[in-house]
Amino acid sequence: MDILPRISHEVLLPVLSFLTSLVTGFPSGAQARTILCVKTISLIALICLRIGQEMVQQHLSEPVATFFQVFSQLHELRQQDLKLDPAGRGEGQLPQVVFSDGQQRPVDPALLDELQKVFTLEMAYTIYVPFSCLLGDIIRKIIPNHELVGELAGLYLESISPSSRNPASVEPTVPSTGPEWDPQGGGCPQDDGHSGTFGSVLVGNRIQIPNDSRPENPGLLGPVSGVGGGGLGSGSDDNALKQELPRSVHGLSGNWLAYWQYEIGVSQQDAHFHFHQIRLQSFPGHSGAVKCVAPLSSEDFFLSGSKDRTVRLWPLYNYGDGTSETAPRLVYTQHRKSVFFVGQLEAPQHAVSCDGAVHVWDPFTGKTLRTVEPLDSRVPLTAVAVMPAPHTSITMASSDSTLRFVDCRKPGLQHEFRLGGGLNPGLVRALAVSPSGRSVVAGFSSGFMVLLDTRTGLVLRGWPAHEGDILQIKAVEGSVLVSSSSDHSLTVWKELEQKPTHHYKSASDPIHTFDLYGSEVVTGTVSNKIGVCSLLEPPSQATTKLSSENFRGTLTSLALLPTKRHLLLGSDNGVIRLLA
Image 1 (cartoon, rainbow, N blue to C red):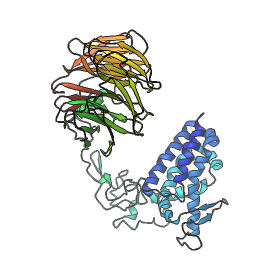
Image 2 (cartoon, helix red, strand yellow; image 1 turned 90 degrees about the vertical axis):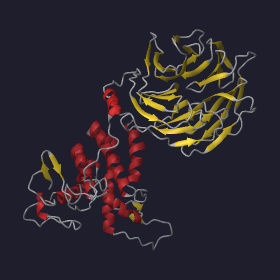
Image 3 (cartoon, one colour; image 1 turned 30 degrees about the vertical axis):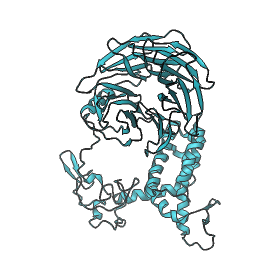
Image 4 (cartoon, rainbow, N blue to C red; image 1 turned 120 degrees about the vertical axis):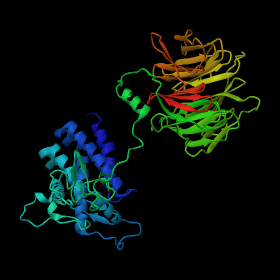
């Protein structure tokens, strides 16, 4: 109730102002305006049902009256018979019409046809019935023209139910477009006397609609609607009711059906990641090992980088039975070496990939927007990370332990910081930026880690975190860092605390790839084992071995779709698989 006035003035009234505008047309014409009208009026009716009559009179009388008022305006325009004659007004000017409420409003005569197709008798009936039930007697106070809309609704009711009239009255008007229309049958062709079947034939427990020609009288939602002036069974020739519907390619089957049967039963409050090894989709196409995968923020697409020097953009449209293969939507081929990083710069929606030089490109067109080459070809870039929105910067580490920031909107470097500090910690293997963008952590080949403040460039902390190469680092909300190393360990750190909060050890292989899901870490090893570790107390770890039926080759990269709770697994044979 506190925000209801804002909903009314900032959402409903602006939408209604252009829905009922006499000067603003829709690019898609009447059908688009009709659909938006129906959705908007359904929303207003739902709010009215929720808050009750008194609150509607207090808070929502203006939006309801605004929508009803357009019927009066069109009724008056019909009576005035507004012509398209431009005489009497300057070029580009719209005629001004004085309405019965004393207001003078501009009207675009070219829009009258569109408006009359939208605000029909059926639309009047669609809005009058629910609001007269919801508002009761208050409708007289809120809606000045309720009687007019009620009359229009009554006319519509008569047009679809001619048998409800007095039998002594004249015969119902018959739509001229239906050559085989039977006026005695209530507007239904070949009425067979079966009540409730609307002129169709009852076959067992199925209603079969005959393939007779029907009058074309589009309903509220265009040609597909089965309600028109000619009766409940009327519609256009492509009415779906007349046709045998083929089995949809989007129907659930196979592994997708098994996955959803389980997923529907999972509680929304369940914060754990459950891995069932259900194969949902395959993405073949790379000719070399997949070195990195990264979903886009919407989770409708993902990027993959490979040793074959290409980056591919894949759609995540779910279909098939788990064995289907999906082709890439776009292939980026401007790299000259093996691609080891892909990511999305979320604020400007750009794709970022690196093969020793950073490429920023448009994922919709594949056009290269910017290339950042290393200053010295002997000092290549070894690690890259993108800053979170609303930042538009990319952070890059080179083999001389220098951290550079580049803003994709500006030429040149933004910042440059030295990370070594007189030490020789080796090459920077991994970078991670905190979710706030205020700090960045670098992991070195010696196992050393350095935490840097991105605002000041000051090194906040440097410490020997592991005994082997740092393989990957992730930063989590709450100043938490997760790092994995070739010493088979996965460690959880607080940014400014000396001792780790959790320490996991892989028995056989190092954890070379992992991703985060809430308070859990999903890990992958070269022996094709998927593990789930907890960031909370008490520490827990569960491991699953990938079966050869669901995943072939050696696991090289892993990414998690947090909303869908799916895993993208890249292999050394160039195939990516989607598993749940």
